[in-house]
Length: 469
Image 1 (cartoon, helix red, strand yellow):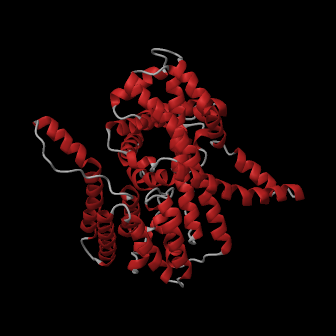
Image 2 (cartoon, helix red, strand yellow):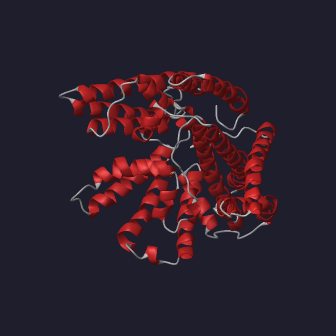
Image 3 (tube, rainbow, N blue to C red):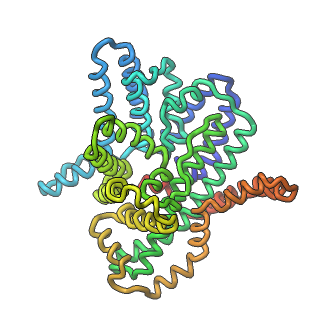
């Protein structure tokens, strides 16, 4: 079940909200936990048992670590190996079996082991709980239900943002839901739903046409390739940020303040700034739990270089199992190193438009290996982008005319222009400005909701892009 589905919007969410707001005080966590299990089990009932086992394992392990006089390190290493091993098994088991079958020339008939929904998110969240408990920076939760509600919380279980236990511990234990929170949360949800259904799905159709053309007809023209890549870059942004908006909005409706996850990353003037704006909670997690420990006091340049390369590869592995994701991670880490090690202070001194263009080029070329299925396709697509072959053809002109309006709207909405206009109207101090702001605030979210429902009902099923990675 995903947020942009009829089942979620018209079956699960109304029933859940009715029970949640009816429940008093601490019973809200009971409803949240049980509702999250239903949400998770709707599409993957078997993996729901895995989630429950992980929750119980972490809860008991953390209590044992806190109370143990000796053996804390052993308990921590066991828990670390458990979570990393579990993730690696589901991420790479099928690829490893396929490699063995190819090498041995036989069929092992082991079946498939698809990655359980939400595993990348709750693995990081579980580690963000266990590591501080091991270090003594955080007390282990004495209330099983509080920890279970934190890990299984359906608004951000599948798509993020990644929320550290320390950030939300107090909210899980005690929170107050106000009408203002419900209103603001629902509006944010409608905006996120519109990003996903109207923009991401529409731009995804353009990318699919280009990708299908490349598979069936060979190398596309340069213009066709650029149209497809720009469409994919906006698709992935609007999907990830749209689902984050929906998660933050639902969390606000339930009384939680989840962290922001995207901040117009395509306006970044450096790769460093891009990662500060793209999937912010993921970047923060890797910086806190990988980069800082590896580059601690007294460690030199080599430690920083190694940490950045490692994080790039780990990020690639977190997103997907194919070699192309590791290439993406290495590419982004390599360009990040150029900024931090070679260029030092030169890049921040560039005129900002030059920095934005440079960063856009780095990010777009990186997205090629997110979008394609294998390295050979990626190289062929990169050569098309660079003008090897035709520069323009009829297919490119047709796609440009067909999707021109959607591409322009997507490009404009990648900037904060409407957010800035909204803030100026809200703080204008004039009757007309405030009236216009309130009108837009009340009209735009319902319109986006209606358009999104129409798109979901009338279109084909478009699951979250991350499920395909």
